[in-house]
Length: 42
Image 1: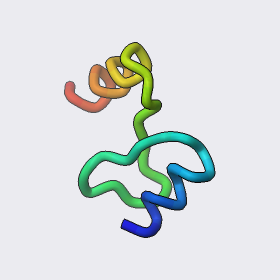
Image 2: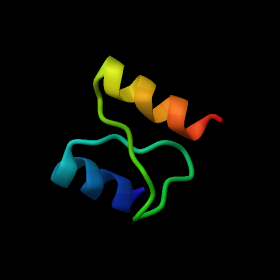
Image 3: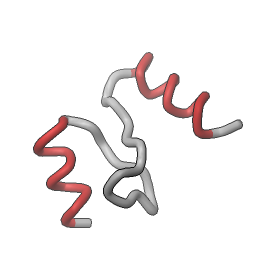
Image 4: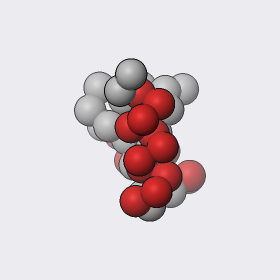
């Protein structure tokens, strides 16, 4: 949880459940989030 908060503060990206440092995160923008989910949910 702390790592996810620090990642958000540094990069402005939000972290999904079970996120770990080095994993892909989500850009808080509807279009960028859609790209993330299209990539992850295949």
